[in-house]
Image (cartoon, rainbow, N blue to C red):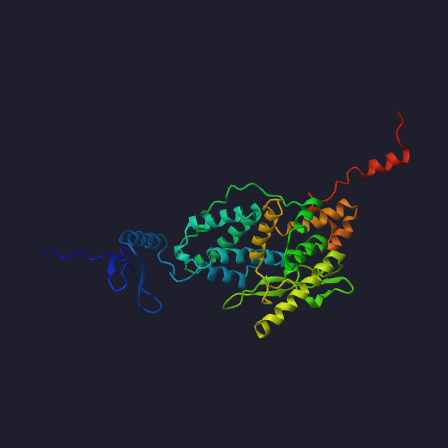
Length: 388
């Protein structure tokens, strides 16, 4: 009788685990040179076919790389590792902020997925969803780049054998330029039967030009309703500490972002109503009210998630009959557009929006700034006129 052939290392085995009611694939990697212990990698699946496919994947990775990555590491873990110890090239605070935003989006979408099971299809689905949500192509490309960098570091550390982010294709979404609302569209929004929270937020965004993060991070301590003054001192950002993530106040992008603005009367009036509503919420909830001190807190006093606010804003725009293809940041574009149309100098606009130079304002809001190319012709027409 011929003895059964011994399986070679890397061939793997497949068996049914009755206690777990699952098929298990196991791959023998030999002895660990450091510990001398036998190394085996196991994965399971509900069907034999799926388990066999996963075993084939492990076997292929072993033969290509000489090892098999850890099976318990999540996408969130490797992205957090990259953000906690960023490359030296991330010197600029703006670069760090932008890449942190990319990382937060990845964690929110696919953070719980185990890295060993992350597929090209899952990455492309995330990118397509971003395109559907109105993100610019540049932002989508940046998000894929951060995921690729995180996986590349995991490759270097022997955690995974293939970088699926490098293979994933960007969605063929048209480039979306930010736009500004017309005065009639803003009026349509404000004619709605809005909650005090939404009326105050929209009014403040359109009439003060604060960034969405600056609005959601605005504290009552920085608002003087009597003097009609608002001091911009922080922005709201997702924390990245251990345990459950939360929202915290964080420093602004640049020193010029710290600014003090006069509030138009409609903004002061809307904030006054909102403050009375918050006082009623505090009285109703008593000790259960979490007083964050934020102007745009939720009904329990907690910070509001920016993602949820963006989604709700699209629905508010839809109710107003102006379409739902709007982002909250475009209310800032609207602020710039209305000032420019009224003849306000670009240097003054730059100060109001917290830009370091007016050139930044011109670059970012080139579509919203009124055309000044005809200014010289208009001046000389007035001085000398024309004869027919």
